[in-house]
Image (cartoon, rainbow, N blue to C red; front, side, top):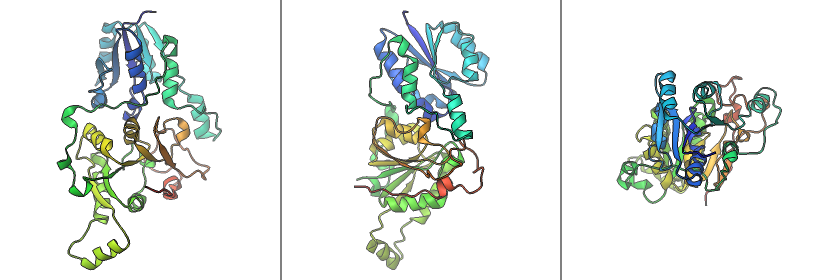
Length: 338
């Protein structure tokens, strides 16, 4: 089968797009003269805008039928449906070409969430994606994830406080759902344990939380006794709240410069993995067993494994279904930064 034009479909959360980048790279570099198109939501355009392996980004805006008409006109030789759900199946039903899909493990995930029976394979989701394109004689190149930053979004040193110029730690405080995020008091506890200059990353919705963390650690030069006490205890945490200040590509540029990255199960985690950072990943209602832990980089997991209610969802909730939120409230931060 000769493939000249291929479409990849992924319409879900932003972090999952980064997990598809090894497939994009492999298709572009291992197929001769292939044109690679990528179909995703309009709000995710920036994540792929600088990716040199993507020839065209096709965006789902207001109308799925308008998108289908656009895709039909391209006359693809093959489609790689990495979404593999009812919506993507509806789209591909109009394209009349060969479709490649990974195993979505829908039954195994349901059993784990609802019955706590583990039938999940010990395979990262990236490797499941790569299995989907194996019939095209595509091989895993073992280079990990990709993230490309447009030149205009590379941060300059002057954009961050002087206290963070020499070295800093990133803490990604955001996540797509409430039950995937630490409560405020645990975020403060973690920042205190990090005990270094910290840059908080997240969206506009995380800015207020970031301000409360920043205020807690704010230095008071007018209070000499207070500052002296902090110095005697070797307290070095200094917070720069960058949540909502930078766009996603500028935030990626900050991650690229970080010494370490602490993050929830989120987009920040996958971008950090793309830059081979040492990651300290924090898991609440979701679990690494779902296969989305940091890929091809050094990482440590913080999770509460002593609960019989976890995982309670594949994605997350607006609040803890049980009301106690022990998956996050009872996490212990046992780590050492050299």
